[in-house]
Image 1 (tube, helix red, strand yellow):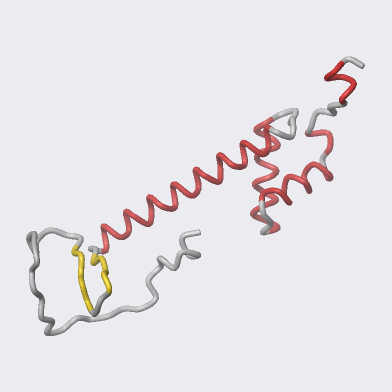
Image 2 (cartoon, rainbow, N blue to C red):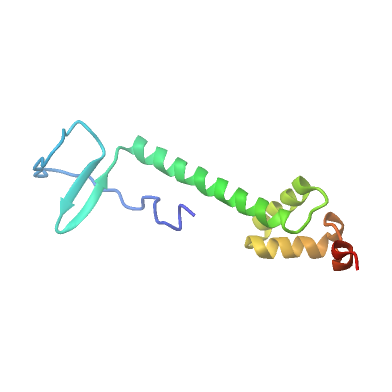
Length: 124
């Protein structure tokens, strides 16, 4: 997802002889907000950038984990952790989205899920 946001730098630039006008703050403090030709940019130190990318990756991974857990639990698994692992494996190996992975796992491994019938729920 981070790559989809185009946050991995592709271009390197060496800055020489640049005129800088300090509007407010201290040049020793980073990140810098840079105004240039009616556009605004943020200049970070590489360590700051790396921390932000790591934080984004962790958040995206946690978000995906929560989505997997939510979808799996809604399918009434016999063993939640087993089904979650199988679904994650399918997503990674087949490079398919979550819903397709769950459907595939449910089709290929029906024994991993409880057989729920409406009669059982409503005592018909």
